Image (cartoon, rainbow, N blue to C red):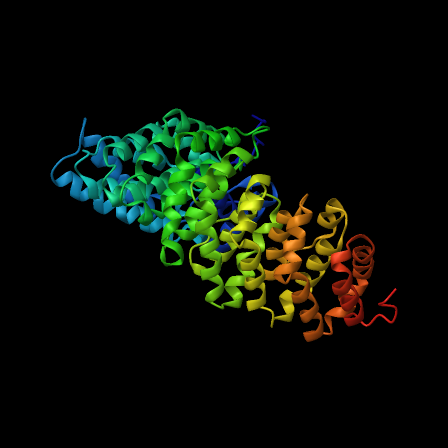
Length: 500
């Protein structure tokens, strides 16, 4: 692991003393003294997260609502030896709910989570969690929610790991495998703790969290546990900049080997009506890291279910959804940030299909199942939007009319258009496959590009400025089947020598 960059910090006592000195020694009024201390320390590169910033005499750290909540939890914990019971559980549940509410709702503007974490909150919550009886499900759920609200950065997740958090959480999840609320809140903690921390990922994998995930996916409630899919995505994402070489590729192979990829395919059968379609697709994309896994996904029916999802998403006729749904294809295999809601359904589906299409053995299967026609159909449904068609036209013509796949891919551009990203999938399907390229033309890819140029003549300038005519002329020279379409394209671009 690469060395962690040193960050200057300051204690609450030292900060308060600096404000006091500004007042006593420099004669500043309280508000000015506080602002000066903040600015001075910030300019010096001091990390002020977790510091309660208040004017002397108007409240201090002991008066802070989050700290008062933490103090009460500390007292209850000190009064209990092994396990909580009776009235203590009621009080602890209420306090944990208050703590999570304070840290979630005000996390960005007041830094409550950082204040609690800086004052031992994570260690305390982990200890409390270990002392809650397994049958006290509501208290456990409240504890998980509070824990997740505190895990906001590497320092907090390291405190979680050092406090035995991974073992505590995995143990409770294993015992509560049939409790939906415990699973939801528990896997939220797993996702938060593993985010940006390679060591926590390793700790969770050492505890066989993958086997636990498979058990949950194989149960009856998998469609309702969105946080489970978040946990898979985070565990398989290389996002710790302290690490030179991440182990997540090996974790993905391990996930696939025990059957998680197949279980995720099953979870997609609900289609667009399933609230977990987006997150399940993202999780499956994270698992599909090599050709062997892509083949196994296809063998499990992944291509069929995704083709249906593409058809269904196109029928929604929502331009915003369609445009956003393809934006990740230009990310070069990077994992997308998770978003709630329907607006990125098509995005995830098409990216996952592009991943599967990367397997040569899957390309023919996708084409044979009518995938090329479905992709062209999806593009045609949004062919009245010039903002997406400009990029689409360039990409479509470059790839279909180029006789060199590497040149085509190098010149293919993807911005925000649905069609341009559909083209990215078509380009993968056509790569190293002249037959598939022919099928694309037969399916109407070339015709759609020509129709779009006729419908939006303003796009001609953009295409010509990007040298599109040279690719079309190459097509006339190298592909007899494209000769007529290429001639029409040159004519519609306004070129006088379109017959040459």
